Length: 162
Image 1: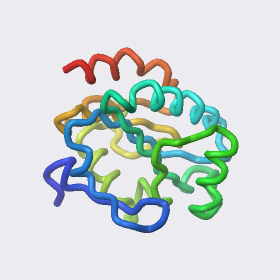
Image 2 (image 1 turned 180 degrees about the vertical axis):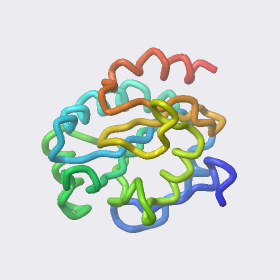
Image 3 (image 1 turned 90 degrees about the vertical axis):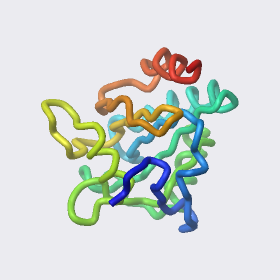
Image 4 (image 1 turned 30 degrees about the vertical axis):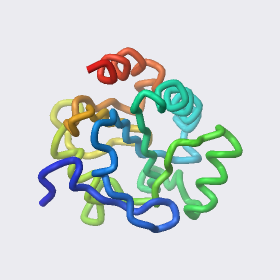
């Protein structure tokens, strides 16, 4: 079992290993994303946050997931192209994964174990749930799909200043 955020590893959109130890000292926002969801326009605000704070030690990792209404049916290449063409996304988009169930990716199993959602529910309820991780690798906050990325600005600023 993973004992630290920095022990995590996943696959990037090309299927290559992405080790979380490279995120040490950074504030990280992890989001399960989908291209055909009512929340898809959040990509715009996510990209704005990323551009605003990336030079200050902020990273966003997007994890495409097709578990909610089959709203992310494309291949990893199609997803990346969609994000870039429609929202100018430059933050890292990882390989498509499951976030719930027996095939859930270890990244999401770890995140859910660290911060439960509303009423203690551990599962991911829908696309665009967000986990905010501080520069020490602690999962400090979990936000529902309804939370607009722009509303996280103050909290991100605060974590970056620590």
